[in-house]
Each structure stands twice: as C-alpha cells, then as structure tokens.
Length: 128
Length: 357
Image 1 (cartoon, rainbow over the protein chains, first blue to last red):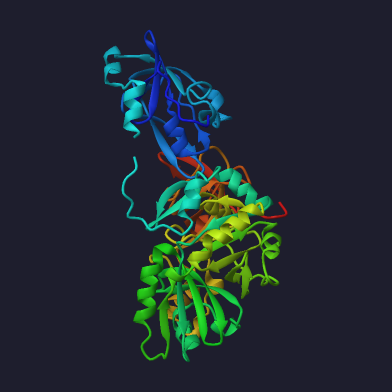
Image 2 (image 1 turned 90 degrees about the vertical axis):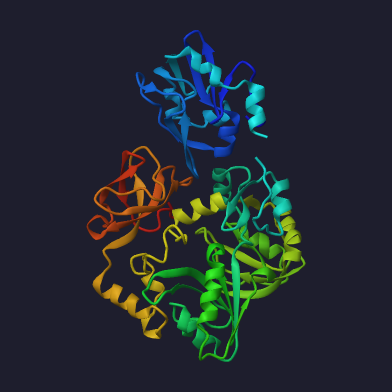
C-alpha cells in the first residue's frame, strides 16, 4: 500500500502494532508505518497456534532484506489462528498490512489491557 | 520523528529526497539506503545499470619524489605492479597485522597517487598516513572534500557512460581523465557489485549535472541497501563487518593482495599468519532451510557471522562467517544460532553468485 493509512476501527500499540477487537478475540498485525520503515519483507515465520503471548513482549519477527525486527504483542492472550500463508508470501505484510497481511488472532486474557492502546488519531500523532 | 541532523550530506542530498529515498545515518553521513526497493535496485544492476552516490567515501592524495616508496611502506600490495593509469586493491595493517582499512589506489602520475578510503575509516586512515611520513619526501593531502563520487554498475553501465563521455572509457582496473556529461571526471574501471562499470570522481559542484544526465539515460538510482546485497553475493569484504583491526588479511582471505616481501607495516605479522594458518577463516555460506543469518550471529561449534542477507539474485539467505578451520571446508554443514533458533547452512565457494549461473 503506497500511502500512509491508520484505519479508525483499529487500536494501536506504540511499538507500531494494530489490533482489531471482536468480542474476546483480537486480530493483530503491524502498522503501515512499521512495514514502510522495514521495507520489503522477505521472511516471516508464523508463530504456533496455542502459544501464549504477553502484552508489550515480542511474539514474532519480521525480516526485510536489510534487517530483522521484533513484533510486539499489543494485547495478552493465546494464539488461536496464525496467518501461515505469510510464510510463502511475506510481501502481503507490505501490500496489505491491515488485511491479507494480518499476523495472528488471539483469544484475549485481559480485556482491560485495551485501555492502554491508542486510537488512530493518537497513534498517528506519535509518528509526527 | 525528524530531528536536527548533525550528519554530513552529499551534494546529491536534495536529489535523493526528491527521488523518495529512505535516508539513514551511515558513517557520519546521511545516505540513501533505498529508493524504489532494495530488490528492484539490485536487479537493475544485475540486468541493466544502476548508479550509487558514494560521495561519503574519502580520498587521500600522495605526491612527491618518495610517493611510491612511502605508499609501499603502508599498502600491502606490490606498488611496482601499479603502472601510471592503473588501479590496485590493498589493505593497510597495524604492526600486528590487524586490518585498518581496505582500499583502492590509483596511480595518476609517476609520483602522484589517489587512495580511496572507506567513509567510516577516513579520519583514522588520514591520521595513519600522516603519522608514517618520517623519512619520506612526500605530501599527504586530504582531498575528500574535493570529490563527489558516483559508481555506475551493470551490464549496460559502460555503454551509457560512454555515450556521455568525450573519449574511450578506461579498461577494468585502470583510470583516466575524461569529460562526462560536461564535467571533468577521473573515470575508474572499478566497482563493488561484481558487475562491469565505472566509478566517477568529480567536483561536488558537478555532481547534480552528472547524476541527472545518467538518470535521464535510464540508469536506476540505487541505495546502500542494494550495494550491500550486490557486494555480498560476490563476496567482497565490507570493513566493519568482514574486516576489522582484530582480524588479519590472511584469515580474511585477502592474502592475494599482500606482498610481505615489500616490507609494508604489518608484513612480518602477515607472513607469520600465512605460515602457521590462523585458527579461523572467512568463508561464504548459504542457508539450506528457513531464516536469515545476520552479523553477530554465532556459529555452533565456534565462529561468527560477519555479513548476512537474503540474496535477491539467488533467492536464498547468504552470508560470510569466520569459521574454525574444521568447519570452513567447502560443503561443510554448519548451524548458525539466529536469535535462539538453529539455522542450517552450508559453506560455499566464492563467489556465491556467478554471472553464468
């Protein structure tokens, strides 16, 4: 995706991750800013379903030609689905970071954690 | 995000910004790491022609009656083999053989040489050059500010530059003065990508004019990201990664550019290393499974990765590592600890990428 975009229906973690919360499940990924900063993503190993992730802690890595970067969990919970298609087409994270480039779905363990996340306007402000 | 920059800028800084380059701090300079994307730029150089702004690199001029004898005291290669109009690769070493820098020297006249330094080492090199003039009738001149430097590389590079030149281009490992796109230039038949091409040393005032003419002729602007993947595919050393003061030229695989009989500073240590074989050897490798090894990743059983990337030409992760001799044979299967995960790799021969496949 060519232009910066931070959809209003998502919540954001300051380490450049997003979460789309639906009941007690959140879909997570990295933001437009993160994929743009990394450049073309060439390697991603989807984490195992069943893994427990902890807010503010890394749960995966994305790699561009030049560098590797940790992906930080925006919320805590258990991974119930992992986007395994990205193992063969990690470039989807660049092309569609909020759609086909989603990374994991998590069953949330602490609903109150969402209060620490930013809305689109607040997150965008951190980038300026 | 933006903060006041204390980094130096090349004369082409505005051109990079206008072209949408992603700029990074590198060796005290604000340099383009990529424009359209590293892979795209990489392939442009392998299949057509790309241009790199390498104006951050430094230049040291050496003149005077003792210029050759003086440089022979510093440079590891045999200066007697460097004729006027020639280019020669060498290292400079400390007394104990540790590598201070690797560099190209061009002989412009019998007693006039130009040495191109790595940006990160320029100040150190200059101090070293000046500290070792005792007993030699030479002038050592820092002329880094006098030059912008453009590297044009790729199978089409020479043809494109030749179209803008007032005369024939120098052959590989030679240099001569020409006028390129209206600008006086020292044209050098050297490069860092494994492709044919030339490097142009020009006045900073002329840099935009030459850059614009080459882009208009279809040459693709390329950043330091692609420069790194290109050089690693052909196993060219990068100082600060594959070379350091803690490593000697023999273990780095640079014995071919060391002529100990010339008595350069560090020659005795280099000779000793050549005779006993160092404990480790720098070798290229390729990963056989998933993952990308990076600088600093340890190798199981000893050794360390000094460069690593995904190879855009080969589509696999590649790199170079210092390995114990027992692991360093071609075909040797190794495991690299990539941030806690063991990744399988195999030791390869140089270069990792060959033009003919």
